Image 1: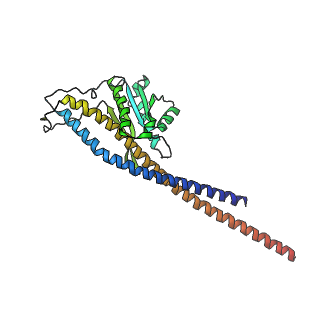
Image 2: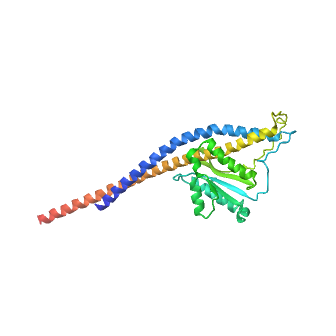
Image 3: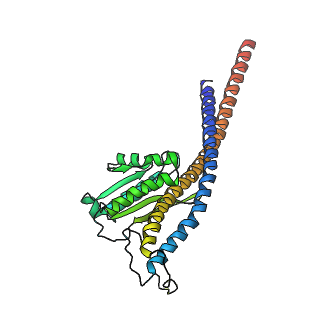
Length: 291
């Protein structure tokens, strides 16, 4: 009977776990809908702004200095790992950390050996995992998720832009999960600075008239574009996080259901065996009394 009690306790424990994972799945689903709406509305604006800047850079006849597009030798590199502040979302955070480590051992191995690769984190999970693996975290912006607004993120973008223009870093890259759908997240390595210039061979964009000047437009639009780029990356990551957590909790809920069914079957078999044993003992006792 002790065995039956243990199985009953385990069934009760798994049922409680299933209630928790199911509740977390529902919460993540609600957050995902809101985050998905944000990134769906933001992407067309961000893409159009990048298109305008790309066309602006193709215009001939007027010289404008773009301090954010200056390409230097990649001696000092900054990697910004964008993860989450919470776990229980499958390999979401581990994939970001794995990519950062891969870059320090591959593309930027030479700079890393010289101590010229710095790591910033947005999300405490990547900070914790990287620190545990022996990596130095030079700065973190984990509190951004407490107030995920454009103005709040713009301040962080300005800090990163200042680090580039002051020549502390020659290149800044983001590593994050890009949202595709609730079940799929695309691990992304995205260059933030210097601004990439897209060559365009078309002559349709070479007869613009700028007012007040091309330089003024550069100085105004490019900082806004960079702020939007960071906001889009973090919003993408946040939506991907909710999708990953919803999927992970859905799988955990299904696994708990399977475990409950298996334990219930074991309980019924053990109970049947106990009842059979008691019947045999009673029968044997009755036969002994007859004798």
